[in-house]
Image 1: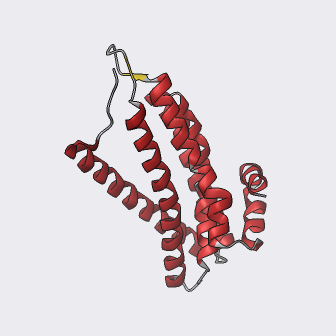
Image 2: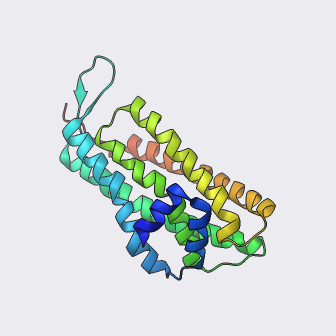
Image 3: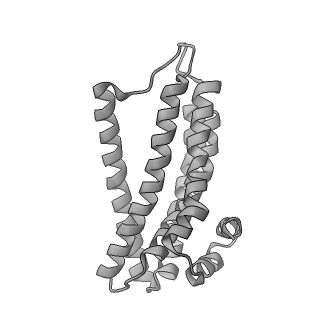
Length: 200
Protein backbone atom coordinates (compact mmCIF):
# COMPACT_ATOMS: atom_id res chain seq x y z
CA UNK A 1 0.00 0.00 0.00
CA UNK A 2 2.87 2.40 0.80
CA UNK A 3 4.42 1.89 -2.64
CA UNK A 4 1.00 2.42 -4.20
CA UNK A 5 0.67 5.74 -2.37
CA UNK A 6 4.15 6.82 -3.49
CA UNK A 7 3.34 6.05 -7.12
CA UNK A 8 0.01 7.82 -6.77
CA UNK A 9 1.59 10.95 -5.27
CA UNK A 10 3.98 11.10 -8.21
CA UNK A 11 1.29 10.52 -10.86
CA UNK A 12 -2.00 11.86 -9.45
CA UNK A 13 -1.37 13.62 -6.12
CA UNK A 14 -4.86 15.07 -5.53
CA UNK A 15 -6.62 11.71 -5.82
CA UNK A 16 -3.91 10.00 -3.79
CA UNK A 17 -4.14 12.52 -0.95
CA UNK A 18 -7.83 11.69 -0.68
CA UNK A 19 -6.99 7.99 -0.36
CA UNK A 20 -4.34 8.71 2.27
CA UNK A 21 -6.79 10.90 4.23
CA UNK A 22 -9.42 8.15 4.28
CA UNK A 23 -6.96 5.42 5.25
CA UNK A 24 -6.74 4.38 8.89
CA UNK A 25 -3.14 4.20 10.12
CA UNK A 26 -1.75 4.45 13.63
CA UNK A 27 1.33 6.55 14.29
CA UNK A 28 3.48 3.50 15.05
CA UNK A 29 2.20 1.62 11.99
CA UNK A 30 3.00 4.57 9.71
CA UNK A 31 6.50 4.84 11.13
CA UNK A 32 7.10 1.10 10.75
CA UNK A 33 5.65 0.88 7.22
CA UNK A 34 7.03 4.04 5.72
CA UNK A 35 9.43 6.23 7.66
CA UNK A 36 11.97 3.70 8.95
CA UNK A 37 12.36 2.21 5.46
CA UNK A 38 12.41 5.44 3.46
CA UNK A 39 14.75 7.23 5.88
CA UNK A 40 17.32 4.50 5.30
CA UNK A 41 17.71 5.43 1.61
CA UNK A 42 19.76 8.64 2.06
CA UNK A 43 21.59 7.28 5.11
CA UNK A 44 22.79 4.08 3.40
CA UNK A 45 23.43 5.86 0.09
CA UNK A 46 25.51 8.50 1.85
CA UNK A 47 27.58 5.85 3.62
CA UNK A 48 28.33 4.01 0.38
CA UNK A 49 29.02 7.18 -1.60
CA UNK A 50 31.39 8.78 0.90
CA UNK A 51 33.36 5.61 1.65
CA UNK A 52 33.46 3.89 -1.75
CA UNK A 53 32.99 6.57 -4.44
CA UNK A 54 34.34 9.68 -2.75
CA UNK A 55 34.21 13.26 -3.98
CA UNK A 56 36.62 15.88 -5.21
CA UNK A 57 36.88 19.65 -4.77
CA UNK A 58 38.87 21.35 -7.49
CA UNK A 59 42.25 19.71 -8.08
CA UNK A 60 42.64 18.44 -4.52
CA UNK A 61 42.05 14.80 -5.48
CA UNK A 62 39.36 12.38 -4.36
CA UNK A 63 38.36 12.38 -0.68
CA UNK A 64 36.76 9.56 1.29
CA UNK A 65 35.32 9.26 4.78
CA UNK A 66 36.55 6.55 7.10
CA UNK A 67 34.11 3.68 7.61
CA UNK A 68 33.69 4.59 11.27
CA UNK A 69 33.04 8.27 10.60
CA UNK A 70 30.66 7.56 7.72
CA UNK A 71 28.84 4.97 9.83
CA UNK A 72 28.27 7.42 12.67
CA UNK A 73 27.05 10.10 10.26
CA UNK A 74 24.72 7.59 8.54
CA UNK A 75 23.20 6.50 11.86
CA UNK A 76 22.73 10.09 13.05
CA UNK A 77 21.22 11.04 9.67
CA UNK A 78 18.82 8.11 9.85
CA UNK A 79 17.69 8.94 13.39
CA UNK A 80 17.42 12.65 12.59
CA UNK A 81 15.14 11.97 9.63
CA UNK A 82 12.84 9.75 11.67
CA UNK A 83 12.76 12.30 14.49
CA UNK A 84 12.22 15.09 11.96
CA UNK A 85 9.14 13.45 10.45
CA UNK A 86 7.64 12.69 13.86
CA UNK A 87 8.47 16.20 15.08
CA UNK A 88 6.91 17.83 12.03
CA UNK A 89 3.85 15.63 12.48
CA UNK A 90 3.51 16.84 16.07
CA UNK A 91 3.90 20.47 14.97
CA UNK A 92 1.30 19.99 12.24
CA UNK A 93 -1.10 18.55 14.81
CA UNK A 94 -0.50 21.53 17.11
CA UNK A 95 -1.05 24.02 14.30
CA UNK A 96 -4.17 22.21 13.13
CA UNK A 97 -5.68 22.83 16.55
CA UNK A 98 -4.90 26.54 16.32
CA UNK A 99 -6.64 26.60 12.93
CA UNK A 100 -9.72 24.95 14.44
CA UNK A 101 -9.15 21.69 12.53
CA UNK A 102 -7.91 19.29 15.20
CA UNK A 103 -6.44 16.10 13.74
CA UNK A 104 -5.11 12.90 15.31
CA UNK A 105 -1.33 12.66 15.59
CA UNK A 106 -1.29 9.57 13.35
CA UNK A 107 -2.79 11.48 10.41
CA UNK A 108 -0.34 14.37 10.88
CA UNK A 109 2.69 12.06 10.98
CA UNK A 110 1.41 10.20 7.91
CA UNK A 111 1.02 13.54 6.12
CA UNK A 112 4.54 14.67 7.08
CA UNK A 113 5.97 11.31 5.98
CA UNK A 114 4.41 11.40 2.53
CA UNK A 115 5.31 15.06 1.99
CA UNK A 116 8.94 14.11 2.70
CA UNK A 117 8.88 11.13 0.30
CA UNK A 118 10.58 12.93 -2.64
CA UNK A 119 13.40 13.96 -0.30
CA UNK A 120 13.83 10.37 0.85
CA UNK A 121 13.87 9.05 -2.71
CA UNK A 122 16.34 11.63 -3.98
CA UNK A 123 18.68 10.42 -1.23
CA UNK A 124 19.83 7.84 -3.79
CA UNK A 125 21.93 10.60 -5.36
CA UNK A 126 24.25 10.35 -2.36
CA UNK A 127 25.62 7.19 -3.95
CA UNK A 128 27.53 9.63 -6.15
CA UNK A 129 28.33 12.59 -3.83
CA UNK A 130 29.09 15.29 -6.38
CA UNK A 131 27.94 18.68 -5.06
CA UNK A 132 26.76 20.25 -8.32
CA UNK A 133 24.94 17.08 -9.37
CA UNK A 134 23.32 16.67 -5.95
CA UNK A 135 22.04 20.26 -6.10
CA UNK A 136 20.81 19.83 -9.67
CA UNK A 137 18.81 16.75 -8.74
CA UNK A 138 17.89 17.85 -5.22
CA UNK A 139 16.19 21.14 -6.05
CA UNK A 140 13.35 19.54 -8.08
CA UNK A 141 12.79 17.06 -5.23
CA UNK A 142 12.50 19.90 -2.73
CA UNK A 143 10.13 21.74 -5.09
CA UNK A 144 7.93 18.64 -5.46
CA UNK A 145 7.80 18.15 -1.68
CA UNK A 146 6.61 21.75 -1.34
CA UNK A 147 4.02 21.10 -4.08
CA UNK A 148 2.80 18.00 -2.22
CA UNK A 149 2.54 20.04 0.96
CA UNK A 150 0.43 22.77 -0.61
CA UNK A 151 -1.75 20.38 -2.61
CA UNK A 152 -2.27 17.96 0.26
CA UNK A 153 -2.88 20.31 3.18
CA UNK A 154 -6.49 21.31 2.38
CA UNK A 155 -7.36 17.68 1.58
CA UNK A 156 -5.72 15.88 4.50
CA UNK A 157 -6.39 18.61 7.06
CA UNK A 158 -9.94 19.01 5.74
CA UNK A 159 -9.95 22.79 5.40
CA UNK A 160 -10.72 25.40 2.76
CA UNK A 161 -8.06 26.02 0.10
CA UNK A 162 -7.37 29.56 1.31
CA UNK A 163 -6.87 28.44 4.89
CA UNK A 164 -4.89 25.43 3.64
CA UNK A 165 -2.51 27.76 1.80
CA UNK A 166 -1.83 29.73 5.00
CA UNK A 167 -1.46 26.51 6.97
CA UNK A 168 1.03 25.06 4.49
CA UNK A 169 3.00 28.31 4.47
CA UNK A 170 3.27 28.09 8.25
CA UNK A 171 4.63 24.55 7.93
CA UNK A 172 7.24 25.75 5.42
CA UNK A 173 8.28 28.44 7.89
CA UNK A 174 8.65 25.89 10.67
CA UNK A 175 10.66 23.64 8.39
CA UNK A 176 13.08 26.45 7.55
CA UNK A 177 13.55 27.28 11.23
CA UNK A 178 14.23 23.61 12.00
CA UNK A 179 16.73 23.39 9.14
CA UNK A 180 18.64 26.45 10.37
CA UNK A 181 18.71 24.99 13.89
CA UNK A 182 20.08 21.68 12.60
CA UNK A 183 22.76 23.43 10.55
CA UNK A 184 23.79 25.55 13.52
CA UNK A 185 23.99 22.48 15.75
CA UNK A 186 26.11 20.70 13.14
CA UNK A 187 28.56 23.59 12.94
CA UNK A 188 28.88 23.70 16.73
CA UNK A 189 29.48 19.94 16.95
CA UNK A 190 32.08 20.06 14.18
CA UNK A 191 33.81 22.89 16.05
CA UNK A 192 34.14 20.59 19.07
CA UNK A 193 35.83 17.87 17.02
CA UNK A 194 32.82 15.79 16.01
CA UNK A 195 33.30 16.42 12.28
CA UNK A 196 33.83 13.72 9.66
CA UNK A 197 37.22 12.03 9.46
CA UNK A 198 38.78 11.80 6.01
CA UNK A 199 40.95 8.90 4.90
CA UNK A 200 42.58 10.86 2.04
